[in-house]
Length: 537
View 1 (cartoon, helix red, strand yellow):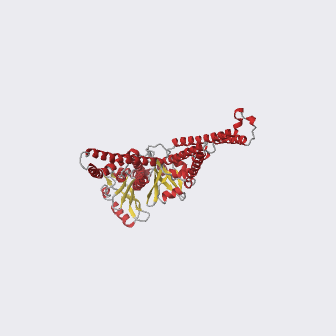
View 2: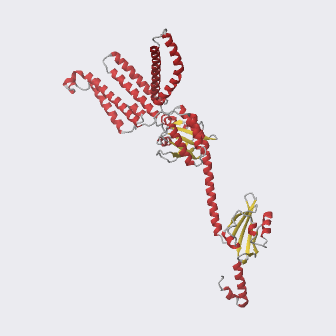
View 3: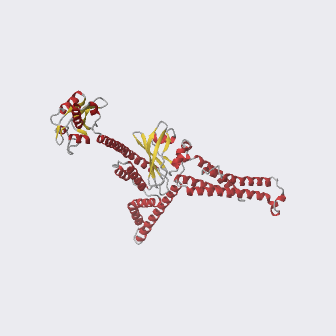
């Protein structure tokens, strides 16, 4: 009973454990008292005073049988709640062993010496097998073995029916001819040789379809999978399409991708991306020095949740991570590597049929994971490019807003003389048409500034890397007339001091110069103190 509770990982600190032990202690004390005569005969009812030894025997047998029945009931209850096929298979072995132990104990209670010896042998063998169950993790699948046996028996039975039916039909048909036995044997040999091999293949396929889950063609699935995910560059779409394909083609209940977000010297940090299955999506971390991480990242091997639960090398290394993964109800973890680096994990749940993962299934999932690695890397690169583009767009929008809010005209020109920046103040000061946009040639601007030295200054800045500050020009601009401008020209250099273009800043001080002329006129006729007190505008 205690072994079963430990095997099923029932809470050993629960009160029920101690209340379960108390009846055994009380019964053992009562049996010892009766057997060794510590209790006087008057303690017992008059009807059984002369059969105290029989009472001790059946009392002990009854208590032991109750503990066995409770152990079987506990195993059945845990098995019904268990979804993992390999865990269910292990519990089924436990149930069979407990039932065999109960049968052996029942034979021990018989009055026949031979049956008692057989029962004792069976009980001992069951006890030894319980020890084997506790130390062995890889057990044959009972369900698959039963189905294989049923399939073999079905094929053999149908084969016998076909053989006997063919021979019987030919014997009836050729009974009236001479040498009927020889003709029957000859025709039966020809018929069976020609028609039985394809018929047996069809029967075998039909039986496997009936007993086992849906079969799949590995090459067709890989080809269809590559065609499905090959051109998807958005990460969330890729994950959704990939998991949907795997779930439908392999008939898996649910799945998820664990994508590595970052890592340091001691841990991997994953984000969880599940499918429609409602599971916890909180990120988790995995220690790099654990056997689980080394199997995935270094050896590239698939790991089952069953191994994480049973093998102490896995479950004791990083218990918080293992418990987190156990809540996701995953059956198999398949590493996804790119250039020998772990980039993600494909996590798949149990088959809808309830069967365990076979080697063929794991190999197919590993192949799909290898194909997914390329698609994930492309999606990650595309996501980085998109984020960079969004950042560049945001910065450009911010720069455009800054330039638009500047009162001075700002014009930037690249090394080929193409206009890169042309703000609204430049349009207003130079009275440029809206058709003149960034991307055009700077000579288009110079056409609106005839007779100015700006082209020569621009060439000088490009050739000598020289800057000009507050250079005054007075062009005649269409629509504005004669204006007074100051121009600043500066070379644009990169971090390597390489010339990348020219920045031009234009300030309009036409009104300021006109006011200066008026003030100078006032100074000729008024006192300077009075002129200084006049408004500046």
